[in-house]
Image (cartoon, rainbow, N blue to C red; front, side, top):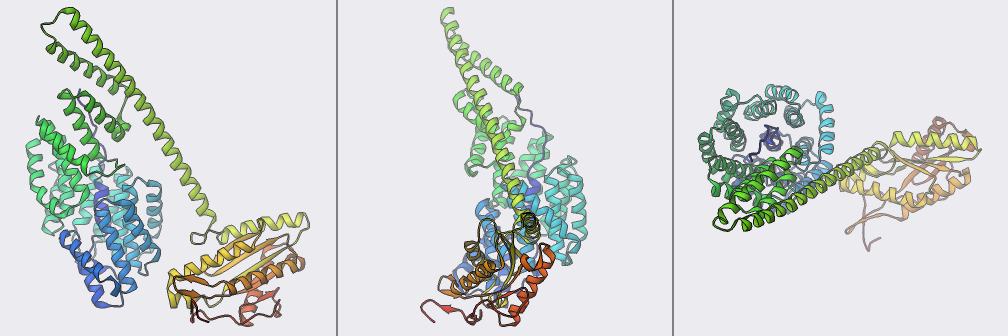
Length: 609
């Protein structure tokens, strides 16, 4: 039986986008580390990632040996390059961790943009499409406001490849055309042309003679972009295979093999082995086809699902079956089903069972020739029984795989829904309500209090001198202070109380069923807890305090707007009166005699006063 594999969207857009997201000339990137020598060194290493990948790897290792001397920005730049290399090698989970760290903490807009572009492709490679397109959607929203030429170029590139990969090649081609027009001065048009070709490939508009494809290969080769040139050459091999031009396909494979082995790009090496297996199979070279397919399987990572492996397992199945090794053939077929379950149909299963039974019958006829008729009938019956068992097992495996696939996608969809619901209500850093949701919940609770004539207090508080902690210790420590303050606050609140981040270092609390006096006590306890609980990170102790303003429904009623204005006025009065204190309804008197706050600029060390 022959497999009829329809021409479908391959993973070339992902390959092109993965390389593109970080392959532009870093001289345009706008990073400005304080140490010019370190900046120039990393930029020079950055520039050779694809043109001289082995040297890039060596240079990266050399930088790590002296990384202690790098500035903070240079260290994030280095971490970004580490993430790029992990992505390049196909080690996607570790690469994702590096990329997310850069996005969350790097103080360099251009570097964050490049990391965001790479994250889209990383998530796509891992099958995390909901997250990948969420990132792409947010990036598309920012496109009209992006003035930096390089940032705009990168966003257009990744939007082009993501849309092409999503089955929208017309839109992908539109963004690719915009990308070509927006190519920064001095930058090769190779990368934009690659996006155009991958969009045309997605629209099934390419042949082995397409001028756009052949021109792109020439331009990328001339401009010393070997990885992009290899991507286009692998697409050309696909088209030659579809057109049964096997000799031309093999000649192209032989031409690009040394370059791919030099660049060591994982996806290219995997695809090269898979295509070689397909060519050998169609040429009737069974042993060579099997070896190439086994090479592709051996270099894959656990859990990989891609077209290269699908073809490799198909070749292994057909070669083993032709050689009469049915147990091995069935094993490879099960792997093929996993790779290609979207294309498996009942008719295929029936044809496979029929073909296996027919071939086994012919083999048994040759082996038993000369034996008595009774013996031949008996052995044939045994073979048919065995095939019936194998067929039953195959149906069971298919059913289990289908059920597992359904459960897997249901779990993923549910997790995505819960994640989106959480993001719609909560602040991403602290995990508490964001401003809009806090106001909504506070309004609802005040209406309930009004109906049952209960009382509540609205507390607004702001961390004192918070800008100093960011300036002195960096944003990572500042984020840790915010999280620490939130944890302390939660420990002093009741289940019914509502807590939210109003913006920056400002927070709001609605104390439900709390008269003014009780609210004063809770606010004072919280203020004292802040003062008594500095943040401790390694050997660093960062003290902090808070100024608080309180407004009560007993004096102001149940409308949220007057309560907010009064609490804010009280908060500002607390700041004017010296900070680290509680002020009620805008009054100037404190609720308790308070010690002076410790300034953020003078962090204590453990064991010191």
